[in-house]
Length: 114
Image (tube, rainbow, N blue to C red; front, side, top):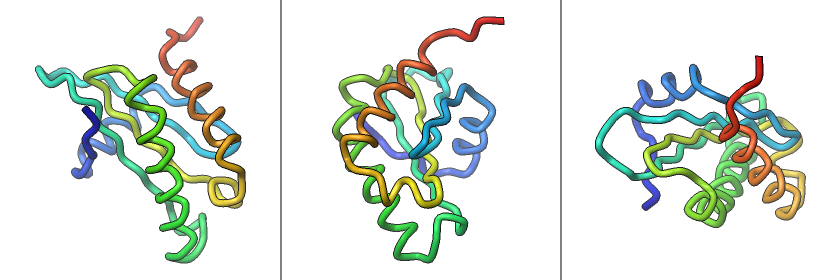
């Protein structure tokens, strides 16, 4: 089940968790400590991405991508935040975005080596 992040506190908590940077966006992944197994996803695009039209386009593309990939590759009980990148999220092809999201999900799943 895919839900949406709506509260600022959830976005701030995800910002402190694992992240994977790709050429087209940034993915943040946080394991929640509650009884829900739902996968929640949030999207953000700052003014650096462009005007309102560009920001909305970036978020639309990321939403379509998340609907396609995260139910299959995401982990239950996690929050994911996708952050748009300037001149990338709106310009790259869907195939590139798809490959980046799959690679990013694999990266945040593996524990970091220190």
